[in-house]
Each structure stands twice: as structure tokens, then as C-alpha cells.
Image (cartoon, rainbow, N blue to C red):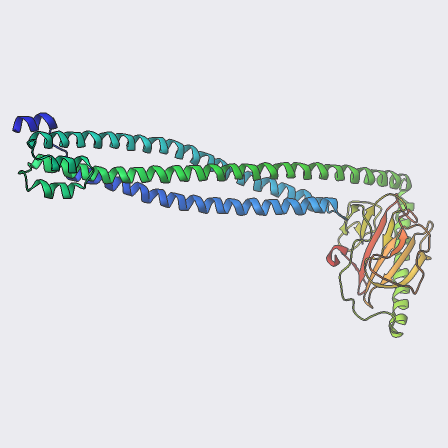
Length: 425
């Protein structure tokens, strides 16, 4: 029988340890696949969080651009920041695309290993079947039928021991086949896991691409809207500068006008303080204001509160030119509304202003808090002493006083000082 066995096997079977290493490698790859999938899930979760934060920021920016009193400088900086965030997301997205390509290649390799192992297993089963077929006479067909029916090799070897003395090479081949079956099962599971992970990653990558495209589109719209606002604001400022340039050709007269305007404002402040003290003593003005303020009208902000480069503003502190409120530009005649509940303490031209005088409405919200609305049209939708609610019309946008064009100068005065109105919104 020895020549037959050698002829069937062709060469001695590989050591069991080699087969075991192949099985160990397959199981190790399965464990690595699980670790890779967990790391990939963490990456996608982080990317989803980035996408969500970016989408929320873009929505907020778009809402601000549609709203009142847009601070164009801050919006511009935020849009630049969002562009940077999109670049980070784009890098992560490209990483996912690379991983997907790698998984596709890995899946092809694993499927090839599984196919090869399935072929090896079939060949070894055929060898052992032929060996058994040659070893048993025709009366002993039950063992062959047991083998061909797919019974376990452990049972097969136990049953074979009753019939023949199984050779060492046959035992090694049977053990090899049993190990190959386990390896094939591990490879098959690796194939299934890799295919599932690849399919999931493909869906996740497509979802990230859709979210990224939406963010890019929304950011493009926000940039376009910002450019429209910037052009509109620049045009309004250019018109104001041209008007001021005509007024300021005589620099000495311009300096005197600034000084007179500043003095007129100080005198008006003193008068308002006296009026408020009297009304507070009579109990018509509360000691404190409980609430927040609202924008007095829709429009474009052409000047914010603080240091400015516009020469028609007076000096203050370390600023060569300081703007004590916020300038809002809208179509002339736009309704101006009270920023909060309060009492009208002044309405009319500023009597201390050099000509031309500005029409001003002042609302006291408490003993220490007032809102000023200047350069309005000389009309009387309210009167001194009227109690007004937030949003009630107190005037109409105009261009009275030292104005370079129709706009509203909105200011907030707290405890004797003009402060940034944005802090109270």
C-alpha cells in the first residue's frame, strides 16, 4: 500500500503547526478588523460632530445676514473660520475615501484567500476519500459513506480505528483537513465582516459627501450675501464721505463744528439727567430696567460703536475719532421703534446743537439707562411723558443735523456714559 499512499499524497503533508499558524493569522486578522472598525466609527462620529457644528454655525451666520445690525467684520471673520473648518472636514473625508479604497482591495484579497482555501480543502478531501476507497473492501462501505456525508474527522478517525490501522500520513492529512475547515470558516467570516464594513463605510462616506456639499453650498450663499451687504454698506459710507468732504474743505470750520457739536451733546446730556431725576422722584421712571433691548429698525450698520476712522466723529480718550453709538441705514422714512419699555423724556431738535440741528428722541428705561434716536425726521408719533412699549414707533429715519445722509444714530447711555448698544441686545 505504501506506493499507493505516496502516489496519492505526492509529498508528506505540511506540519500541523503550519496549518495552525494560518488559522491563527486568520483569527488575528478578524480581531484587527474589529479594532479598525471601532477606530473608524470613532473617526466618523468625530466627523459627524464637526459637520453638525459647521452646519449650525452656517445657519446662524445666514440668519444674522438676514437680520438687523449685522456686524460685517465679525461675520467675515466667522466665514473665514468656517472655510478653515471645511478644509479640516475635507481632509477627513478624503481619509475615509482612502480607507474605502483600501477595504475594497482588502476584500478582493480575502475573497481570493477564501477561494484558494476552499480549493485546497476540496483537493485534500478528495485525496483522503480515495485513500479510504482504496483501503476498504466493498463490504465496508459504511465508513466511506460516513466520510462522504460530511461527518467530523474526529468521529471518522475513531470509527476508522475499528476497521484499519490508519497510517501516520492519513492521520496528518485528516488533521490538516480539520484545521483547513476551521481556517476556511475564519476566512469566510473575515470576508463577511470586511464586506459589511466596506458597505457601511461606503454609505457613511456618501453621507459625509452630501453633508459637505450642503455646507459648501450654504457657505457660498453666505459669502454672496455678505458681498451684497458689504457693497451696500460701502456705497452708503462713500456717499457719507463725499458729503463730509464737501463740508470739511475748510478744516478750521470743521474742527469748530466738531467742538460745538460735542459741547451741544454734553449740554443736552445734562438737561436729560435733570429731567430724569425729576421724573424718578415722582415715580414715573423705575430705578432699574428689567429686560433686554431690541434693534430699533431693520437696516445696514455703517458704523459701529467705538474708535472709528471717520473724521466727522469727535475725539475721545485715546481715539482721534470716536463714535458713541451705532449708525443704521435704511430707506428714508423707515419707522424707528423703541428698543425697550420706557418713558419718552425728550423729543425735538437739540437746542444746543449749532445749525443744522438734529431731531432727537430719548427714552428713559430706568434712572440710569436711556436710548437715544438721532437724525430723525421732525415728526411726533409720541410726546414727552408718553409711556412706550418695546417696538412702539417713536420716529422716522431722516437726515437732520450734522448728517451725511439718511440714517439713524442709535445710542445707549448707562449711568452717564454712552456704551456699546450690542451689549444690551
